[in-house]
Amino acid sequence: MTAASTGHVVITGASGGLGAAIARHYAAAGATLGLIARRAHELERFAAACASPCATYAADVRDSAAMREAAADFSGRHGIPDIVIANAGVSIGTLTEAPEDEQAFRDVFDINVIGMMNTFQPYIAAMRGRGGGVLVGIASVAGYRGLPGSGAYSASKAAAISYLESLRVELRGSGITVITICPGYIVTAMTSHNPYRMPFIMTADIAAEKIAAVIACRKTYAVIPWQMAIVARLMHVLPRLIYDPLAAKSGRKPRRKG
Image (cartoon, rainbow, N blue to C red; front, side, top):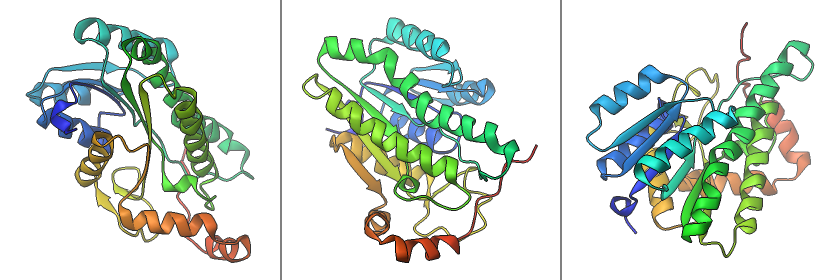
């Protein structure tokens, strides 16, 4: 199956970075798009330049009512989407010892995990009734092991990976495919302030092409790029006696200020 046969695609976090790159990819393939993000102006600017049909929704994935309203509007205007991509996510450096970081922990989990559930929930019954559809969750290789200074992000992505696995087996036999994608480093605002080396880093457009290729072949789990898949496997099996001192020396993501 090719990207051109995707039909209707809904994408969260579509106002910039990876989400916008995914939207550009599917727009070029002629898909009808449903774009969701908090920054209405950026969505409107994208829609104005988009040659494909494009519905935009200024909504926060943490707001379940807003997500249901967006789903109802898109499905009513264009039909049940063929692909829903839960891409919205946030990465914030955190320290457990800092009381002021409690809200940062909540924000990361609410967006990266609860937001993913809120993205998928409005479409499942309709997809089940139709007998098909694709739900795609953007997780991360950071979910394989805990990283210093990224307790909230690593834990949220580990939770996302487990959640997507649960959803996949839960929907087995329904005709709905659940796909977990764990990217490595991508050139976006999220990584622009990382004070450490980021091996195998990709541009957002290249990452979008790789993600679309995974979706097209309906592979249920993928790490991109392939080089990072090797690193992820090594991280997963590395004994704690070796992993802990190595990870402790790695760079830490800056904490949110204010």
